Length: 461
Ligand code: 4AD
Ligand code: MG
Image (tube, rainbow, N blue to C red; front, side):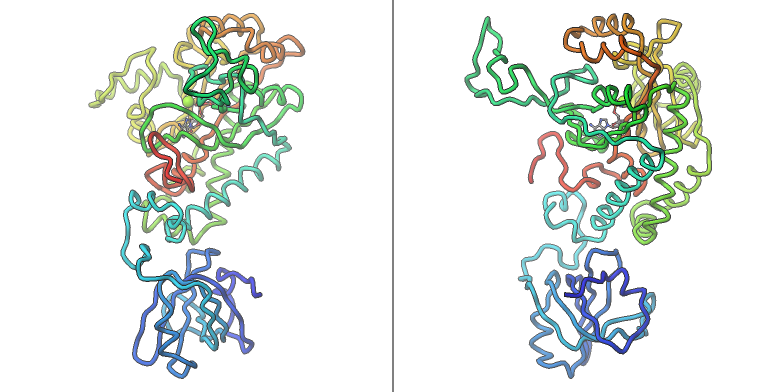
């Protein structure tokens, strides 16, 4: 069986020897005495044109049986193409129809909305947009590993089922084998000692805490895996199941952490521009005009770095018409984040030193006792894409913070022990993989950059 992808065939010179290609029919156009097929095999966004001439054996019946969506194996000669935009085309000498497609196939010529395509997530990868997203997503996963592996970071697999709440905000999906309708109860409370793990368990919201244990032994580590959040945020930037990349570095303060994050983002942008030129060209012309220039500009620039307090001052001075007021002590809303990066600076912005009340318990407390060594990276079009911090490395301060958050230090005994034995300043961050893909492709809705989106009230597949 011939396995050369159409991506490579399109780069070949016309040749005497016959070749065989396999793929799906994107369109068929019948002209007088000749039929043109556009064949796609997923290796590239580009199609290979196949010519069936009238003298082809059984011309009329074979042309009739080939419909949009059917899968074919085609043998023929690669000849110079007179058509614009392609060097070669395939003149068919034999065709095997592998799978036919009846007329009720929804992906006929008509263009469909992304909302509709979400309902047919099993077929949408056959469209140009979703094929391109899938290829970029795959290349980007590779680039993530490449970046960290080239820098000797160790890839750590942190657990998906966990007994601790990393972000301490309780937006977790429970994992249980107890009968939901009739769980064992003691003193009016569910008795989790009878549950599978003998205690309450959840799907992880972040691999950070477990990641820290390995950073405190191997110095530089990263995780890259699925994370789950039961937050009721029905926006174009939130999923209930998303992928996160979390590097964690020992002997590392907040400033080095920011440097790594900035270098990492730029590396990914340049990798995709260099390695996915056809797909990026598609996004640039069809999805988000100017996205290529935008990524190139950002890769060449220095990110702005400001404190939360400065951000609040800038936003207050702006007198913009915000839905939510800007007040010191309140979290920045997405509208504020976008205003900072799009309107005030026109660049990615790293905001540091947030009020301790609005950030997680594990962040290092500043000397002012009011703010923590947090950093969020905000980008145009999306707002927050990265959240990170320097971690509290002092045992007593951390224990106090855990208590202040209403959490039980006993549940975090192993996390606290990292601060008793050879404690070290360490920092890390989390990058939402789907938000990164949104930013690079210009796709507006996060549900369209993951193959099977899970969000509030949506679980079709
Ligand atoms: O800011 P977050 O909550 O940070 C953490 O989880 C830390 N433990 C990370 C760390 O320091 N190791 O989440 C990090 C990033 C966000 O900036 C965002 O890009 C993404 O994860 N994210 C989501 N992406 C899609 N859907 C959601 N519901 C998301 N929640 C967070
Ligand atoms: Mg965050």
